[in-house]
Image 1 (tube, rainbow, N blue to C red):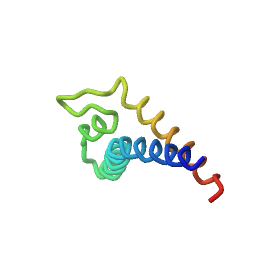
Image 2 (image 1 turned 135 degrees about the horizontal axis):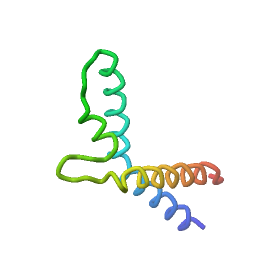
Image 3 (image 1 turned 180 degrees about the vertical axis):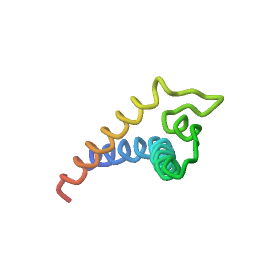
Image 4 (image 1 turned 120 degrees about the horizontal axis):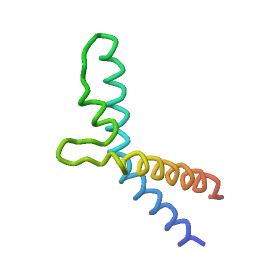
Length: 86
């Protein structure tokens, strides 16, 4: 039973570690764009980053799907870990 808890925590840790950077890029780029837009600053490159187009590397077809699935796995595994008895 203890080994199963350890495996769940390892999976949760790995998924959240992998998805943390893209989520942070999405949050920061969207927030900065929302702040700059009313000021009349056109920073379209922020929207490209927000959707996964990083210039040389274009991940747009997979970026949203990856972020959605990774977020759901992180949330579900986090809830399951919290529900476990200590």
